[in-house]
Length: 416
Image 1 (cartoon, rainbow, N blue to C red):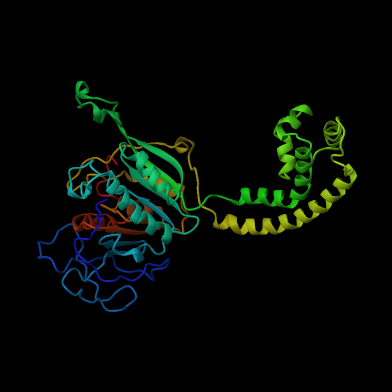
Image 2: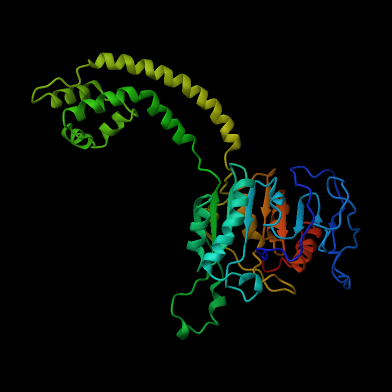
């Protein structure tokens, strides 16, 4: 949520995350050693700082100052990095799903939401980390990105340059919060919602590939018929209507997706030759024999495709609608109630759980490059998923670490 284009402090190269992070470890909250020591937060557990990386190589001091620690918190499910997501693309390694709430641009008074000179600069910055996500995420990945009402269309278009957009969903909030607004000063309708762009890495192409295979196998017959009616000066739509069929039926013959009946073939032959000529000279029985040979070839290829399809089904993008009440792209969840130190953009855990549950499997890893106070990470952990988070501001890393160290119970969950 607060990850800006350039990190405030450089970090040493971290170990690349993996699907398995070893055996149980004591949760670690690693201090930012180069900063002035401050009074210890009594809510945080007293834990030892790590002396080695996750791959057991020693931590090294960063030349020229800066932090010598990149992993801020880690447990059996979650790894949280303190730094800039653009500075360390390797942090993205191993993720299957991205669920993130980046800066909205100009919505909050904080510096991290107003660091760009205009919308074009903001969208260009988005393109930088979307490109990293494109390279790091697998082919069956799902992507969820929050956006403001004002920027939702532009953000959707930017996401569409890198991924296939499926929904521009709406998180609808409690409209009673708008009652304090002076409507006499309004110049447009109020927007009690935030956008959630849902996209996928690649389209679900098996069905299209199966159709393409059918067309390819039967193309010789289709091309023969199309050549004949075009040679006679007919268009497909004209021929279909003249035969008393849907005008698109001859198109399906031409592309090889269907074969005309004997009656339709003879009627077409008579129609094309009504003014003389020799069109569709091949007998229907000859075409039928060729069709049967092609059909046998197609069935053999289709069986091979079915075997591939079964493998594909195991690899296809996960998607589960787990409740009819949550089957639309309108999400109704109450915002998070205020509490000391609350992130200004914190999202409710039930909403984040809905997004993660809908688009991931239990063994998947969720990444949030703008982790903020850790809602995505907590939601993933509660659902039994692994999670990778990146956050620039240490104060929010601290809050996220506190929430994660409490296990699946939330200290501030009331009203969320």
